[in-house]
Image (cartoon, protein in one colour):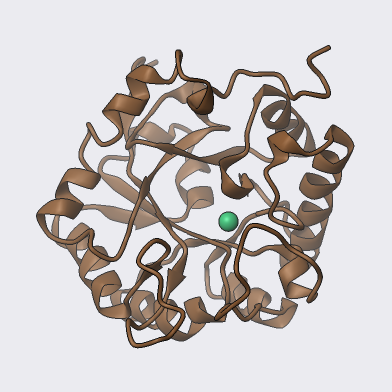
Length: 261
Ligand SMILES: [Zn+2]
């Protein structure tokens, strides 16, 4: 049994879009060219690229050597159009997180719909059939820590049932929308059968006990070359790592407001 932190960069992407696209935002979009450079960099530096599910399905995940995981939040048609061709040509897969309501043209929050076209169930099944992992990103993309716990239950369970139906397999990974997380949300997710949880806490070091609040590396368009090297380093997010016990916004051991009393 190994103790202590394990080095595992989990790269967090949102949109892959050409810079010429009017909806390109440097905060959430990466151009296909830079995306290729980033993934190629990982390959050239000896990382084995896996999906979250693939990595954690191993009986002793952290014994697998140098791996990196690719994750795509709010996945939309731009991923299929611009991101997947890059991954196909480099022969790697990733984990994608669709918002259920987006796929059904229903209300979702905290995201501009400009430039985002949903993937329908057929698109998502095709991704699954090709080896991409589908994980939950909720129904409506709201911060789960800030809505009622009854709504949290619906967000986590209905999105799981939906994806289970598409893949015919139990969905294992949940990516908490906009990073809204607390102890009760993690425990409820585990009770539903999720085995991996992705947070927006920064870092490339993971602790075994944090399997439901895994840290990620925020990859923006300008994170290439030396900058990418420093982002995927052991120390990326170190400041947040040490301040987490003290600063409220980095804590995951809070109770949900509805459950605290
Ligand atoms: Zn999101």
